[in-house]
Length: 437
Image 1 (cartoon, rainbow, N blue to C red):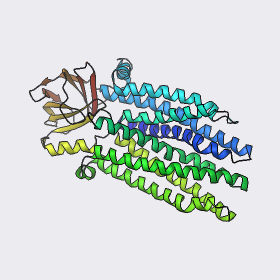
Image 2: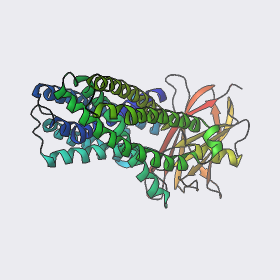
Image 3: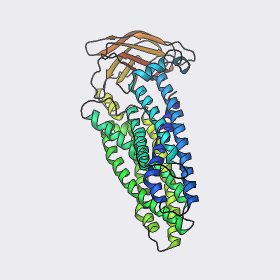
Image 4: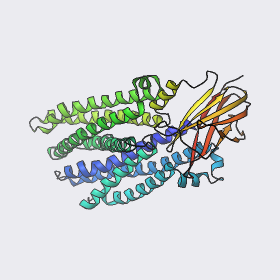
């Protein structure tokens, strides 16, 4: 199920960034460039192609978003996909969790944004300035709201303000740059056959270059903030799966920046200077090729982001390593959610009778108080019946369950359901490996 969740997240992130990116590109780059064109057929063709990108992206956004929601609900409940429809799990997750509320708001945003796409991508370009502004705002809200389904939410104090703002800006900037690369490549490929259409390519490239500089600067600054909060230390950055994937993402980002620098410093000036037609055409083709390369690198970054969202941040893993509190023969899992997280330890972590301890934490790594807590364990064998046990809390705030029968080795599912003082349920689930005896 984890692999399905990663795929759903990757498609959803890509579709959202593309939907927002094509809106940004149409309003800020394409339509101003089209005013320089005398070829109605070219403009009509490009608007139609941009419309295909926008509508397909929105459709994928809805479909992948629904898959993400269902898979997350199953993960939170610890139940199989077939069970969650009959047990009101979907309604509970939708109405009682931050993830569900954000998903509902994002679904509404998709529908409202779709209503602006009809005039925005019409063949005659009938969208008014007010509607274009609304499309940009809605697109920014849609892609920025992805931050509320990630690790930036749940912290307190200054981090609870700075980190979400940085994440929202990071996502909007990514859409403005990465999401606009495919429309740019289409425009560059369709223009340049004569002097009249080459003017469109020149104008679009210059405007995209300016937007790219602003986007890259925003990505760099917001990325530094996110890395500071999520990596925590150099050891966590290099010694955890989360940190190593984050380093690969950073390397891909700088590779994209390198390609973008070549575009801005070498190719864009050659395209913009109206002196040598052959040189201009060569620059246009090179820009089209480089935009495609950047888009491919951006797709790799999005795939990594999809995986990162399923892993505990390096700062949390670093904290647990520093504590040195995991017994050598125990099975351990750190589960991170929107409203809190849990450290689940099963000792011994092999077949037989074991004891479980659960420590609830907030994003500041302080103990999260709960009124009651249940733990559900499901064996890996198909059709296994989940076993749910109530936990007892000690003076340190750690919850304990004794005498759990572990009958099978393999990848079990552990689910935590904690009733918080606010009467809100914190539901977390993840796999945990039980060894043979």
